[in-house]
Image (cartoon, rainbow, N blue to C red; front, side, top):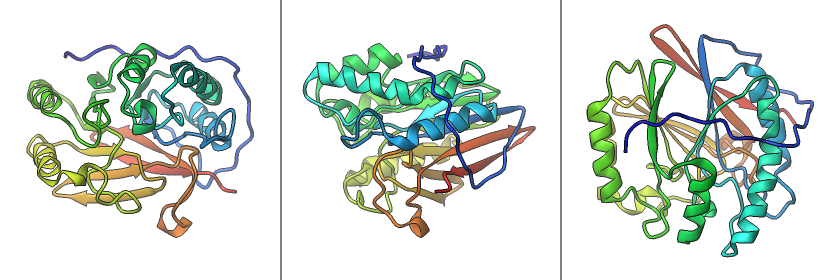
Length: 275
């Protein structure tokens, strides 16, 4: 699978929402946002925090939105799945308040729930289950940890593709990876994320180290966390609107990440809602 161009999603029902934020406005020559776990957990039509987060992203001048999965609650009924995505797109609409921002979304376990038909819907809406692309002088990789038959791992076929993709990239200033299930969970999904298959997890980490991957963004746990292992920065950013299970001091707050690239450096800013 080669690098593919991104296409902005056509969103409807643009909602202008007021918001308060704990960080000042940020600008840069190239910037992207990362958001995950926005499923409303039955609160129709979408998680209330989602539109506030998207409204802020739309005002930052971000050039791209990466998604780390679990945008909907999920269902075995494909009509329900489509309705849930329709509501998600409504909550996402303020993202486009200032300009058209392309998105690159990794699937989550709630988006697929182990059903091939839901994989096909995801591909219909978002293009691919895993892929890569270049933007802003950087290389981006979106991985699928939640295949209908391979949930909780990056399977052999995908790992083979990833090795080839990393080896073939040229002149990337930085390399960023987005996926759903974290390699190193810190909360309720310890032992039931990619760490459930430690040999596979370790092989994936070793590949990231070998190939000089800079950041890996995951979701799945509804919190913010940052770890650095062997030069690779691992972020969990699961605060896109889903119920928070951790206390604020342990990262339990609604947020997204804003990544700014300036020259030969980058910075990751946590943008959280001030209640």
